[in-house]
Length: 418
Image 1 (cartoon, helix red, strand yellow):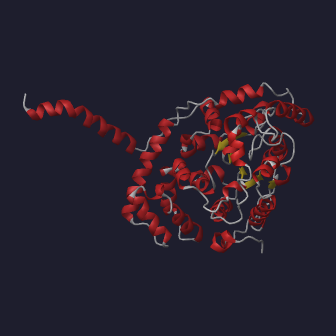
Image 2 (tube, one colour):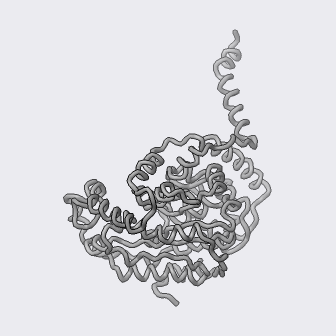
């Protein structure tokens, strides 16, 4: 056998397989429907794969799942978590949890880009954490971890020459993930400069989008995650019928039992693994210089508000507190926290976002927080008293008045409300 024939026998099957795979992912395929069980798994998985994907979210949102945007607090899946309460008491909605540690406004903005038809005129819950508003704002490494080429490609193809899209393009170019693809980076440069993307860029991006959609639809069927089992186990702890006083008493009992090894009302497991011993000594007065009043996050947050306004989304915002005992120990300035809170609320209320549950002053309540900054037992219950009626009762249509001044550097750095 000639050398060429031998080489083909060795490498031919590999070439054919690779070509077939490329062809497969290049065709506009649907990959079928997800089962109810897969939907339930995805809704509480907090998986980056689900977060970055599209098809499973679109299907779930069409089936009465409601997006709950946030960050690390969503992973506190105790018995009083919104996902557990909704399942236990067979409510008309189910939370679809979107967010994890490190996810902030910029990540959420791009992640939600191709959910317009599912979100338009609908309701969502958004937990906005003061800790996002650091001097640096969104950390590039965290943004890169949740970065979705699929959502970004879709956004670029449909971007307009307006203040919000130019700002979004500039911010994405500041992230290494936004420059990872030469075609993507070139298109973003055009958008940032107020220019349309080229026909060549559009062709390349549309082909890329098709491949990414097929990849997402195929691999979203596999949900190796234990969170649904945690939710189902937690349901068994709750009383058969919803009773706010009974649930509050139970939450206090669970909180008391779960915070028995420290004086800060922090969950035992968190305290033992993260704070006990010499680690506490190092952290005393370690946050005296923290300041959340000046941050690019305010303008990233404005991107979300602009998108919600465009799609007429009715949003219930929740501003969680800081554990007062923790703040006193670390020297975190509570006057600064309250000013940050006022600045966030001003940005919301000035533009017609009126559904704001402000829990800033509840950080001293017993068993309200699970740890240093995350809602826990009684905190989730108080949030639920606002979330449930917001989602289950008819709400007036929102009337938003978006103001581009919140994209300006002046607003990012302002320490007082004008």
